[in-house]
Image 1 (spheres, rainbow, N blue to C red):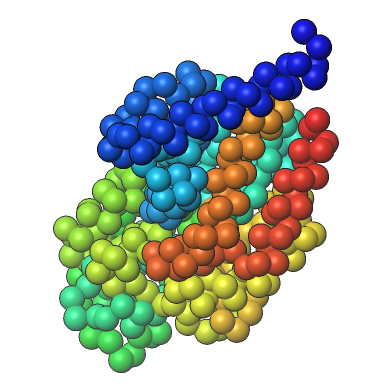
Image 2: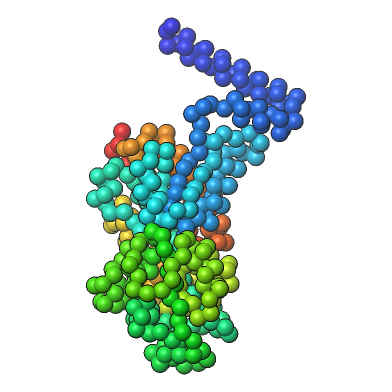
Length: 371
């Protein structure tokens, strides 16, 4: 069959399908029509599959709903191509799952090195930013009132400071009535990007920690109690008077746990709220960094919160069809364009327009190189 005839036949089929759908929509209730269409959807339709960071899980869930609703354009009909299936397994496990052919992206708070990305033919770009809050279960101390320095935090996690009434803590909190109560150290058990960011900060401010433990998603903690996942960690802190730990700011705020203000490089005590994170992000020259592999930890600036982070999407390109990674980019493009206010409402910092522009340019550049 000649090309012109094939084209005309395809156009005729599309026209017939369109007329049929219009007739059905007039005859059948919306729910029945949607069910009928879903049964007849192509077998190759499948959701965008991601896994990884619990830090970013709440906002990814919100963006998934926005994506589905936007692609359905207010209608009842949708295909699996317009849905997102995201598993909360931690940053490390998320990146490891990219070896599975069904996975489309990993979300990680610990960026992958440029060398590893190029070796595997993968993209990496930031999707949202936020602060890692230090929480303390102490009665009568409002959120943000407790002040801690980096060296104090390191000494607490090294076991050198073991009581909330320690003179070193009192010295930076002269106006607080700190209890004579043992500090119960808590941390993540699973491979966590939040752990990476927290220990990256401890390594930046304490040579002893850097030498013995360093920064990683999994750490051989010198002491304390571990819990798997952010939700379980927060629950453990809530159940233990005197407990201290770290978790994503938005989830901490929603839990009602009080958080500490942390001293930054300029000597100021800063809360882990969006203003402090934005100040840290502004100190990064994003256009100078390969594959956006940048740390927001311990950045300079009067208002910078020192335990800030970005969550990155790592996307297989060479290992997947252009259709597969194209769906991932479509999802995050819509998230950037329509999901910024939802990210802010959940306590995150959305990417500024200038950084979104750099991400979109990066997609185009890498796609052209891969084709």
